[in-house]
Picture 1 (cartoon, one colour):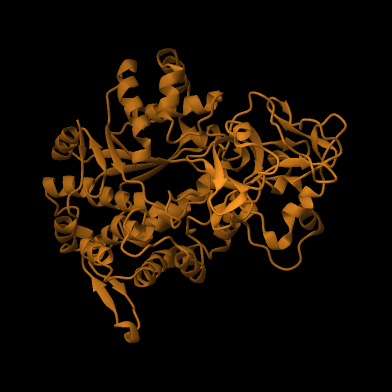
Picture 2: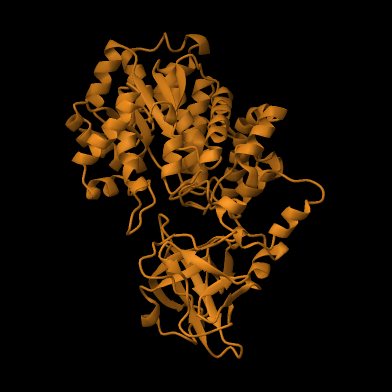
Length: 555
C-alpha cells in the first residue's frame, strides 16, 4: 500500500546527531534506520517490505538521473536523501541515465554523453563530500554499460509486446516530453526505467514524486516479465527560485553548483518570497528538505541568520517548524530569510567550487557544456559572426490554448501557448488590431521562446508569436506551421541546426541585439514560405508559410 510520510525530523536528528560521524551507522537501531530512510519523503510504496528488508539486511536501492543539463542546487534535495540512505547503511547505486538523456527528445547530444556522465560523477561526489557522508557503499553506473546488452534488449522487446501505447505515454506524462504524435523514443523511456530496477538488482528505486506514474508502470509490468515488484521511495517536488519547479532549462529558477557567491546572492535577492506565504516558496523548501537534514549528518541543528544589529541582531533556529511558524506570522521577513539561505547555500557550494578549480575539471566542464563555457578577451571572428546567427534563437511550434484581452491594455492579447512544456507559456502579443480571438484560439503558431521575458502592461511575456507584415503595416499574417506539427517541435533552417552550430542560447542577450540581427534576415519568398537568408524554415511536416504575403518581413 501507498503511505504518506509526514513525520517530524527531530527524533532522527537527535538519534543521528549524538553519534560520532564514523560510528553513526553502527549505532542505529532498526527503527532508526527505517525512520532515516523515510524522513521527509512524500510517499513510500510497500513500506512493510522496506521494514522487513532492513530488519534482515542492508537495503539496496538506486537513484537515476539523466545526464542532460548541468546539475543545480536543487540536486541537493535528492543528495540529502542519498546521504540519509548511506547513513542508514543502504547500498546505493547512482545511475547516470545517458541513454535516457538521448531518448528524451535528444536533450543531450550523443557525442557529449560520455563527457557529461564524467561531469555528473565528479559534481555529485563533490556534493556528497560537501554534505560529509561515507561513500563506501555508493556505486556509480552508466546506463549504456548494461542497457545495450543482449538480455536487456530482449526484455525491451518483450515489454513492448505487453505494454500498450496508452500505458507507456501515461507513465511518462510527468517526465517525458508529451506531444500528440509521440516519437518512439519517448514511449520507450518508462519501460527502460522499469527494467533498470531488475538489471541493477536493487530492492527499491528512489525519485521525485513526478516519477510516480513510471513507478506504477514498473509495478504492473515487471511481474508480467517474471520479475518482482520493487519498493518505491518518493521525494516531494521542490519549488525553484521563481516559485515553480526548479529546472536546468530556466536560468531564473536555479542556482548552478559553480555559481559564484555573488551570483548566488543576486539570484536569491530576486527569488519569489511573499511575506507569510509558504506556498511555492523555494527558499523555505530548501531549508526544510536540504539544510536541516544535511546539518543532522554533521551533528548540527542551527540555522543562523546574520542579521545586522540595527535590524534586531542575529537569529538562530534549531527546527524548521519554528522557522516556518515565524515566517507565517511574519516575525521572520523575506529579507532575513533570503540572507540566511544565501549563507547556507554558499556554505554548501564552497567546497564544490574549490574542487572545480582543478584545471582538468575546468576542461571537462567546458567540453561537456561548450555553450556555457566562459570566454575572456576578444571573441574569435567565427564566434562573433554567430551572434547574428539563426541557430542562437529557439523558434518552435506552439498551440494557443487560451486567449483573452489584456486586462490593462485593449490593444493586447494575453495568450497561453502550449510549447510542449509542463505548463503553457504566457505570451502577450499586439494582435488585437488584426485578429479576432476566435481566429486564434486553438491555432498553431511559430514563436521565439528564448527571448528575455518582457513585462507588458504589468504582465510578463515569455515568448513572441511570429507573423509577416505588409510594407504599409496594414496586413499581418501569422506564420503557419504545417498540419501535423507537434507543440514544442523546433523550426529549423538547413545549415543552422543544432548539429551544425550547437544548442540555441538559453536566453538571448537583449544588449547584444541578437534577435534583431536574426530578424533582419527573415522574409517570406515568392511561394509564401518563411525563410532565413533565403533558406526555408523547416519542420518534420514541411516548410512554414503565411497566407498570402510575399517578400514580407517576419517579426
